[in-house]
Length: 336
Image 1 (cartoon, rainbow, N blue to C red):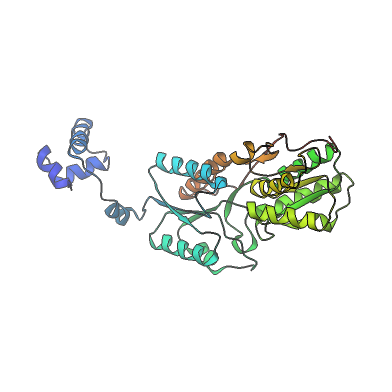
Image 2 (cartoon, rainbow, N blue to C red; image 1 turned 180 degrees about the vertical axis):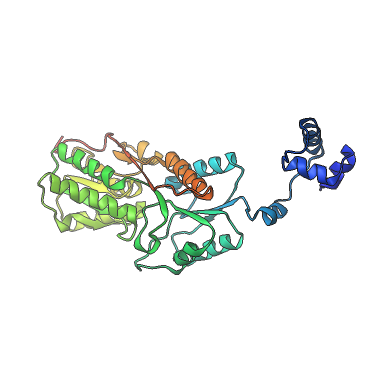
């Protein structure tokens, strides 16, 4: 490994001069700075990150916690955060929580032990109103931005999220405009803020249009293709008659759509279905899926910028970005 002493010997200057050049000290001439920096590059000098961290009390490390990086709802957001971190000279430590509380706690504590300057966290849902790990974060020196609306246990942190409620309201309104009055809702987890917001948007759209809110049209569906399959089978087995289904996300919608098509139903002639998230699989499905497109990359940029603002001593406001409703072939008029 090339040391500053090696550069000093080659450049015939003192180690102190090399140190000042590499730290852009004002009392070194521009000519000397240019010569020593060029020499350092030619020799392959790499600054000692640990030494810099000890000196500046900043590691230039960021922690990012997501459910799974392979999740299509996360990939563009992660890319945006990594891009912004790279631009500003930060490295990213990525960890997966798998939506498990214990794993999330362990990951956060490990990152705090690494002295990360900041954390970007997609919180794992909990029923409890408090969580010890988030209480710890409030007293730590690390700056924190949440990648979802805060639940009570993690309230008080800056957050970045999509306007799930408004987008869900728009999807339900779209179905109502097509003549649908009996619209089933395949709901996600009630403890997940985004899923709860989507359900609120559905109920609000029904009320706004004078359509009764019927409990028998709500089916617990989680967030996977398998969950959508189970919810659709349950609805058919119970003989619940609807003309449209609104799903918590595209995975659920695709699972349900496969069941309906397998039962000989035509989409959208016999039943319309809409999702949420604008997954590639939904766009390429045999009946392309009407959905709400989440601004994933812009959410990642907004989250990174909020964190860097916190690191700079500012107090940024939380950010809510609109999701765009995209109408495709899976939704159509009643009986159409």
